[in-house]
Amino acid sequence: MKALFGLILTLVSLSAWAQTTDETGIKTTINQLFSAMRNRDTVQLRDAFASTAVLQTIGRSKDGTTEVRTESIEGFIKSVGTPGKEVLDERIEFGTILIDGPLATAWTPYQFYLGSRFSHCGVNSFQLVKLNGTWKIQYIIDTRRKEGCQ
Image 1 (cartoon, helix red, strand yellow):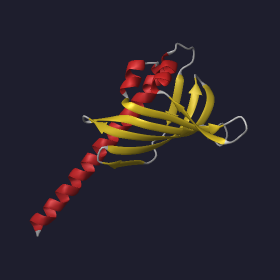
Image 2 (spheres, rainbow, N blue to C red):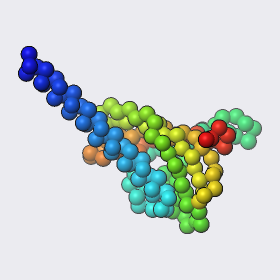
Image 3 (cartoon, helix red, strand yellow):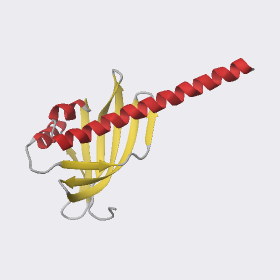
Image 4 (cartoon, rainbow, N blue to C red):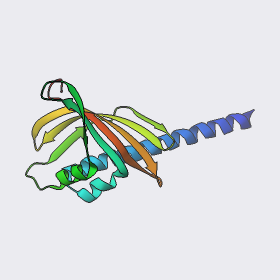
């Protein structure tokens, strides 16, 4: 009975360790994205994404209806890499992270600043995939608003 209890305890401990290690890897990849944005580092930025990644934003059209806009990864990397006076500073909080093997979801409320000037806030919803032992961003969809921000 003690041996069975010991085996169960070991398996639970290993599972918790793997979950913690994966959460660290997921946070590292997401933080890499925002560090690359702040530094306008297109190499680091591209490395955070899977090769088939998708970027989308939920916003409002001119007539006020909700719409989903898709941006290409290449367009995003080009816009971040374009020299500018202001730092692109997206400040996130890690909310929920869910993991199932090589698939993860991360929910990160954020506030976005251009330099020291507040621009907007919202939530990022990340889908990540573990490829060759490294977490990569496969999909991001976010909301953007100017009201209801802290």
